[in-house]
Length: 210
Image (cartoon, rainbow, N blue to C red; front, side, top):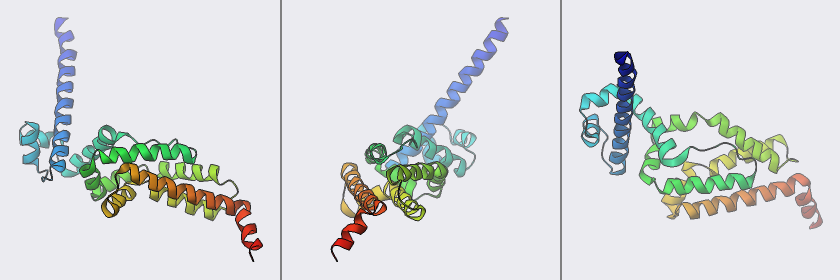
């Protein structure tokens, strides 16, 4: 009986140790990228304090490694992005939180934006993201036609993206707070203009000025 009780305990201990090693390896990758070093298996092993064959045992290929790594970055470093926003105000709350998270992980986010594995991770939940943007536009612009709503949803997704944050940081030296303020300004102006057009207010004003 004591032997059968020890077996599950031993198995649980091994699983916990494996999970801890798995995390050490991924954190080593993060450290190397943040230090602008090439994350070779040898460098990862040295940083994680494990043998190189241990890294291969956990991640037999670079595809396996980067797949796990970028999910770790999204979940543990950046905070998983939700898709529950229903209107512009709730979306902007998420934009601000996300952009400030990007600021805390500049090198990782920049690498992710230029990595094929990072792109694959970002594209995977795109159906959920598109549905969120379509829902927001429908609620904000109930009188707009389908083409206008589609274009507004696409523009909204573009502005709420890592590439938008990266571009404003690279070309305008903006931090996450100012990049968020720029996005908020652009989105509020776009929705206000489209709202006027969809209700006919804008057309009546133009007609009156003729």
